[in-house]
Image (cartoon, rainbow, N blue to C red; front, side, top):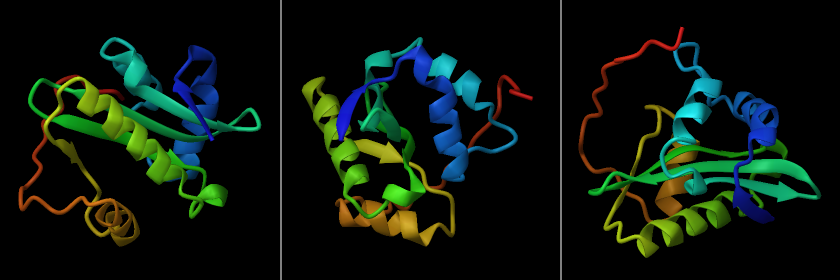
Length: 139
């Protein structure tokens, strides 16, 4: 898989991949999330291609204290091929290179398959509760 930074021409394919993977929610506009990411560390928004087709994505970022992972996705038909592992490895490498000491990520409660994926990569529950407050509604 070729990993490269997101390009605006990728948007429709990326959003379709996220829909196929069940990552989108009615209260989050994926096009707005893309536009937001392109204003902060856009080089850390990666897409993975095989034979010219986008089969994986990952948004990585560093807020000065922790790294974050968002929209990690692998096409359903390509899951199990270690593409997610490759993408996470590159994100970890990029974050380490800029001095990021720890990565946080969120998985929806009950998504045991994805939790198992991250546990296999060395991620463990932190025993924290994630709270959120919408400041700018997307819809």
